[in-house]
Amino acid sequence: MNEFQERLNELILENNLNRLNLAKTIGISSTTINGYFNNNYYPTLDIAIKLCKYFHCSLDYLFGLSDFKLNANSNNKSFIENIDHLLQINNLSISKFLNDLQMSEYNYYRWKNLQTPKTGNLVVIANYFGVGLDFLVGNVNK
Image (cartoon, rainbow, N blue to C red; front, side):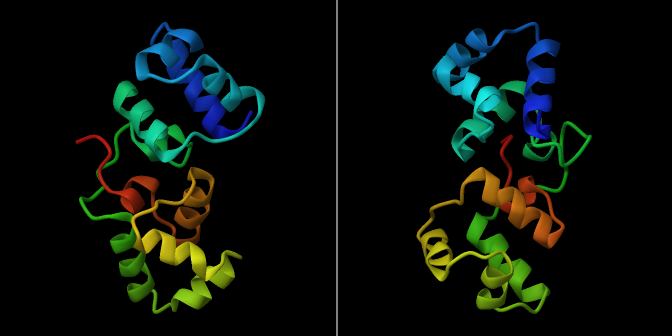
């Protein structure tokens, strides 16, 4: 099991739920929930945020990047505003950043058009900059 799977399973058990109950509660199919465990893929950011709101936890906690359920390091800026800020304070060009992560410039322009990366890529970006997911995407528990 990866860290996301372990945390999600832990939260399900702590809340006396099963996968079917959780799926119904947050409005997704049980096949989707089972896919996180059986097919080893991550939820979309929208679903991850629903999970965090339901379990009253941070994205960092849900994805195993922090042992603290709630994270004080979130903000109210957009993903692209946070990326631009991180590039600036680290004196990095967009090209260098994308090259280091082996991503195309097309990704950055999609993000500029308010398309957030897949959660797996968000984890890679958070690790690259040494920041949390909650910081990258803003406050998910408003």
